[in-house]
Length: 422
Ligand SMILES: C[S@@+](CC[C@H](N)C(=O)[O-])C[C@H]1O[C@@H](n2cnc3c(N)ncnc32)[C@H](O)[C@@H]1O
Image (tube, rainbow, N blue to C red; front, side):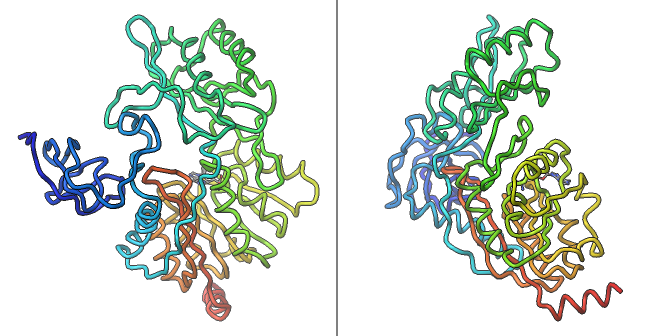
């Protein structure tokens, strides 16, 4: 039954960035401590009016707030926002029974996001609607400007629109992944399947008129006019189309500088889930690095970048699925230190092997506090101490938070493990 006029008190802001009242009822855009009027249908509430605003409520900086589904947590004051995000990490650790001091949130959005995925849908006349998704809907929200995009993304929306128009004939829902690089925009189109010759030529022509660095169809390059380049420290990397990239350059800098400092002194490091080398290429200024990654193109990009940069220590790598074939203690023996940065699912299998290993220092980077906490518990069970937890915010106004945990194992305990392993 729908209650059109429910008066609710909001108890907390959830890990999805929604206000939660008793019931529970989840009310997007409502803040803790507020009294609100909401339209309630089961567990979902639609904010109608804020009757008693929180002292932490501020004006949303973006004119598209609440219509665009992108940035739900814009009306929380900067201090309350930082406490909430830090709290997401602290709660996940507490819930998993891991005791650790969590450092204050590092703000790392810098100039803004260097990648965005625009969605395109076509109406029955073939007219493209291009933009982000509307809040809680499958409809497209069309917009001209997004304040959270980095300057390198200038022209990204116009490019996405023009390319979508060229693909109207496919009638399929499309995603356009646009990355702002220092040599221009890199666009990867997804969802259109194999294209006929004329459509491919039309996209190549668009790449010329829009002065794109590169355009690809689901990873298959149609034209590379200039190699797209991002910097990993001083190393220029050409990431494969649509490949994983930390959301902001400042976020990558924040995560990697913590890891590089924590692993200082190590002569041989492993970078597990290495992608195109954000950690490895910086660590290689001070240590030999071995990268392990399941995506062949990403691994190749890292190794190629290392080869073409003078002055780095050796960077080698292996393509390997670390979920099913984690590095075993015998293989880990070669390394003084390990960084691992898995996808949201975490690195359970690898954490189990690290726990059994004699590695002295481990930096765990994560985009999911829950799986981080699970993996941290495994490492601690293997004799590691969690020395430091640092939350890093590169997804401004969203509920996403990254974090780094620095783990150390005392030499005596590491030696004992080594003896046990024979
Ligand atoms: C969060 S990204 C981190 C990449 C890199 N460390 C960076 O900062 O740019 C996770 C990486 O893990 C890789 N990956 C996903 N599943 C994997 C698996 N089962 N085994 C090895 N690598 C995997 C992805 O291809 C991706 O490059």
